[in-house]
Length: 263
Ligand SMILES: Nc1ncnc2c1ncn2[C@@H]1O[C@H](COP(=O)(O)OP(=O)(O)O)[C@@H](O)[C@H]1O
Ligand SMILES: [Mg+2]
Image (cartoon, rainbow, N blue to C red; front, side):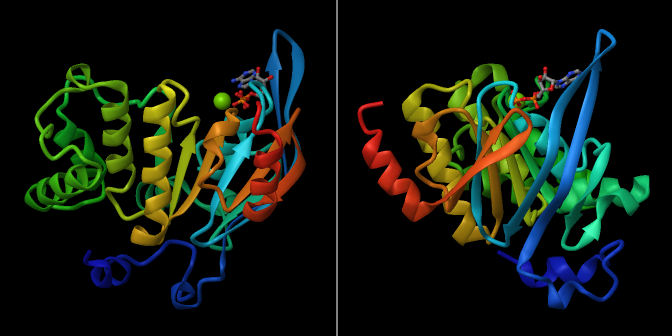
């Protein structure tokens, strides 16, 4: 891929001159807290989360429904702001960014994948993948070529002109993976990417995400509540009631998975 052009063309808001000396920590959440108000009652969705993610790492956030995974994603992805604490992306405090800089970050630095795919229904697979590139200022011709290339990479070279309704769930999620990669993001955030898929299709999507690490040098953070989806992880972070309750490296995980093989 032409990654020799992508970094130097755009100056990076808020990270003046630092890009050649990027730290190995790509995301750092420090004491992140979030309280929602629900019917006048406070819901403590995050109670002080500390998390550092290394460049190129594949981290799974594991926790039951309601444990705060999506809330943490929204904070890390700059889609919502913490009530307390900070989120740093490449050591830039994203709370310090103005709307333009935040939009730039969301467009160029982060690719998002959701449980419900979130594709534009009236647009073809190709157009869905082109869209972030067009927002990012790439010409239509270049966007079309790159979108076709990415869709081929995810195994959908024969489905470029199909609309989401003409694709299976697994195929739709592949389109979403291609779309997430459109602007060569440093980080891919996947919020329960296999939640609406059968086991085999889910495993294929996870294998695809894992392959991105080496091929695109992408950091992947993926939320799940399914133990079967952890195999690709370098590290699993367990979230429980808005707090990190445990962490396991890939090595520890293999032992644990061995033990719970009957599960
Ligand atoms: N917009 C919201 N308003 C009120 N409560 C919310 C909102 N979003 C999430 N919550 C609550 O915050 C907690 C964490 O939710 P969430 O981050 O979606 O968990 P998960 O993704 O792990 O299922 C839950 O108790 C949920 O009901
Ligand atoms: Mg969720």
